Image (cartoon, rainbow, N blue to C red):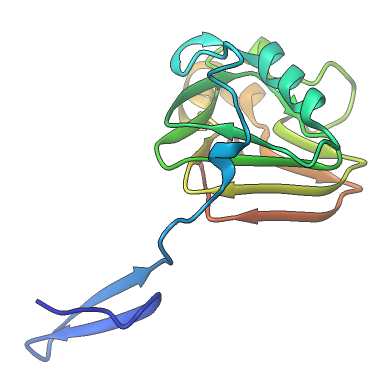
Length: 174
């Protein structure tokens, strides 16, 4: 057994042959629980219901309020969403914001290409942080719809002061 002196990147050599790589993060300390909990807004976190409209409404409502939109552990199924300026989002460990299986839900309703699951356009001062996951559901979508499912998981156009920290971004459409 051993103790790490703190967060960092460590390499431990085992019997002078094998290497063990350890990537240690700081313990999660967030006041995001004091933010606006999406489950208390009635947003489903079981992954059984597509919640695009409710999530987009919550994002629009929190814009510029200096509050954080808090996603506790669970699966939040959504179509494409657009994050407005002056917005903070916190994904707790175990929270998964996942693209729906229905490709018709994965467009912001305009002609901007490429299509994206999460879009930040003409926006500034955005924070997305925590230990949760943004999942583009790309493998399933590509297997079902082929090349028409090629989309960006995260697209930023004319955006600045965007901080993405600690979350896992996985399984893009392209």
